[in-house]
Amino acid sequence: MKLGMVGLGRMGANMTSRLLLDKHEVVAFDFSAAAVEHAASEGAIGASSLEDLVAKLASPKIVWIMVPAGKPTDDTITALLEHMTPGDVIIDGGNSNFRDSQARCKKAKEAGVDFIDAGTSGGVWGLKNGYCLMVGGDAAAVKSVEPIFISLAPKDGYAYVGASGAGHFSKMVHNGIEYAMLAGYGEGFEILEKSEFGYDLHQLADLWLHASVVRSWLLELAEIAFREDPQLVDVRGYVDDSGEGRWTVAEAIAENVPAPVITMSLISRFVSRQQESFSAKVIAALRNQFGGHEIHHEPEAKV
Image (cartoon, rainbow, N blue to C red):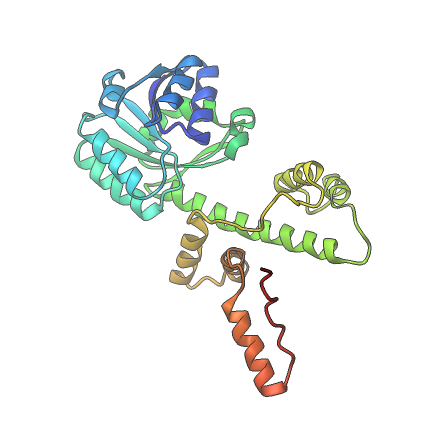
């Protein structure tokens, strides 16, 4: 099939490459001219603007967008709709909030354009391994562009999961589960690292990949990380979040679903960003007040 790819970051560029390898025609656009040139060097057709990208597609036009969630996605869809016509298709493969996707679907439908939300997992390994795709939207529209999903996904790695918003909702929960799994591995390896036994963490990570009940792809990645840097000395313990964990917790609260593990894994990311916890200072001061417990003072700055 012929399609446009908007956004050539780590994910969009690799998806473009995978599509090209499976003989699709891809018209590629990014605000980075260098990114467009790189895609063109691999066989994509470069575009200088969104208007130029749409003009280089045949009807019905198919455009996949891989841009940051929120305003960048809204702005991209608004601009695309100015140049697209009834029967065309927009696919959002980014990490958008499912409610935003439902609103965008309604907006696109008013212009006669189908909007598909494709929850996409696989990260930077997707080029080699394929992407797990959770796809929501009109079933007929999804079917019409299915060859794209089949090329991007590994065997059994793509599914139509429901109406508009279902793709991004399932990806949101997927990432909430990921938060909890990452927290579990992080805490477990810290307990091992602090123990009296002087464990070789790489050895254990590798060992657990063989028939252990905690083996997973994340553990495979831990094995690689410990192989490359056994004590993670070059890694700062600062953990970002891209939104899906927050949305998962918010939806759990809205639906009265207890989700303590996912919630605490999200909170632990906030803790990782503090140089020092003011909350901990308050607790230390109160323990001193009611129990006379020692206060550990900040070391004097060296001049």
